Amino acid sequence: MTSAPVAPAPVRPVGTTPDRPAGSIRRRQRLRRALTGWAFSAPYTILFLVFMAVPVVISLVMSFTDLRSTDLRNPFAVNFVGLDNYTRLFSDDLFLRSSLNTLVFVVIGVPLTIVLALAAATALNSGLLRFRGLFRVGFYLPVVTSIVAVAVVWRFLLDPEVGLVNNLLRVVGVDGPNWLFDTKLALPSLIVMAAWRNFGFLMVVFLAGLQAVPADLYEAATLDGANRWQQFRNVTLPMLRPTLLFGGVVTGIGYLQFFEEPFVMTQGGPLSSTLSVSYHIYNQFGFGNYGYAAAGSYVLFVAIVALSVIQFRFLGERK
Amino acid sequence: MTTIDRAGVRGRDRVAKAVLYAILSVGLLVVVGPFVWMALSSLKPEGEIRSVPPTWLPQTWTLDNFRDLFSRLDFPLYFFNSAFVALAVTAGNLLFCSLVGYALAKLHYPGKRLLFLAVLGMLMVPGMVTFVPQFVLVSNMGLTNSYAGLILPFLVGPFGVFLMRQFLQSIPDDLIEAARVDGAGEMRIFWRVVLPLCRPALATLGILTFLASWNNFLWPLVVASTEDKYTLPVALALYSIGQNRTDFGLLLAGAVVVVLPVLIVFIVLQRHFMRGIATTGLK
Image (cartoon, rainbow over all chains, first blue to last red; front, side, top):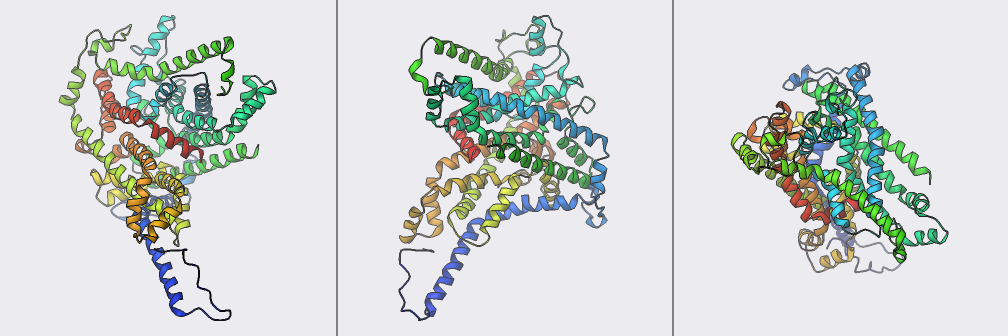
């Protein structure tokens, strides 16, 4: 009803001006269309503004203040402290430690997850395979499982005495370590656990990407005498580049915010060896240092944007 | 590796096939094995769970661990809280995201581009950035430790809009135009013409939202301060983190209760899942 292109504009003799009613009808139509659009957007937009957009802005403002949890009832006690929170962050040993841990988590975790996902996707895409659905659902299972349930299982698997992992090691005569309580092994354990938990998601994305590769490319490669590995290198990987890029960015963004794994498995320990940036922010929030926590979260935000830009540059241009 | 060399399924392919199945089966064992073991162990008495060497199938089958969940913890209540919050969040997302998705895809009005850009930008913002001010907001509204506080911040999300808009753009304009010519109002068009066509997208969004909410952990952990508002993951985590890992049986049974509904939803509706991830992942 609002915009009916069915009737062509009335043909006017050249040189005459449009008569008034038509103009005001059009204006009224435009208003009506705008009102309809706004009416449909309003419920979402209001909730979006109140609970997401405004908090993002407030968070930024907060990061320049010394707001503490005790100030909430009395906002006038809050001072603007300029960049103090940010400078404090970079002389905060725990923040630096958590940044390093997070970096390790991303630098090792992302490639590990991608390789697992790509291997699984490639295998599942094989024409030789049956029961594809079974494998796909199985590999996806950890993705839809609550981290808390995963933690219960993994803490048992990695238990030094009764855990399955060390029991298996004992069978081959190795005395297994205390995985989660060793400062050198705790972070690697969590990385493996995260890759185990997340590769299924990327696998599904990669599978869709693989199925979009035109079959005649492989036919041509076969005619040229390319073996499977060469086909994978020269056809599959280049065709999959946009999908791999997406996977890398999404996984990287996820791992930069790594929080749940250490929270439920190690509480950041032992000796802060699994403390992540998000975890540090969460702790500061818990201590009531809201301004400081907000500054930390903006540093994380900048890191996430930077990672996306770098990955798009790196993978996007090499075409 | 390729789907087109069906012509030569002979000796070499048979070897390749065997290797493929072997690798995938080991993979499946590593991924699914822990879940199977969890389910089986939850049916063992405490002593057997901790026995060395471990047993695979329970020597003594028992439901004691599950009974304990109900006698020592108030699991039915946590279950209700999880389900109630997840259903409310899902309903909100389906309604609000499809409304705005329709407007963004099919209606023309000032401010539309700005809104879409804001939504896209929000996709990049990490949860920790909004976490602190959201908490301040919710506590100033007096909504901590209430269902409203658990639900409201998740009623809408940028991902849902993105998904719905993407899908709605593929619906032909002519269809909507035809309904307009027939004299249907916008609301009627939306309910009668557009929404029924959106069923696949709504199913995808619904499942993803429900699971995300069911598994959500940090927010309910912080907002729910008394036991009567705990969700399942919060109850399980608080119980397990504080304990001296003496009650593996209880924890494993709790984990089974957390995982089982998700597992059922996921297996029944996995097609929608995969489709949703594939389409949003590629676009």
